[in-house]
Image 1 (cartoon, one colour):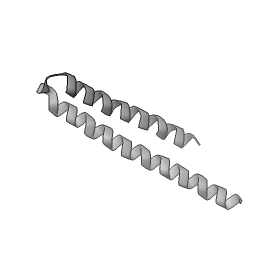
Image 2: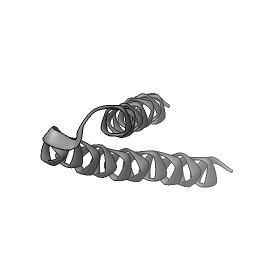
Image 3: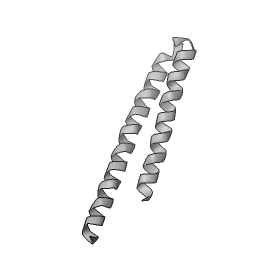
Image 4: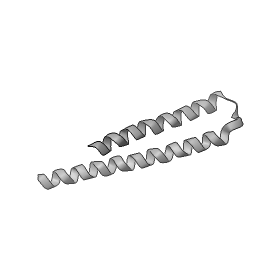
Length: 69
């Protein structure tokens, strides 16, 4: 299903953003900590949203299969 693929891509992107922000925070001086925290909060929200899309797509596929079974 296309929604699952889109959600999987969004999850991968959000996880990469979160990890890159964590690496930047660990390597750089903490003079831009606020921006990095915002980046991680946004990435976390993106992960939650993409998981919800994936769950909904999975539920819809299951319902469709149940209808034709």
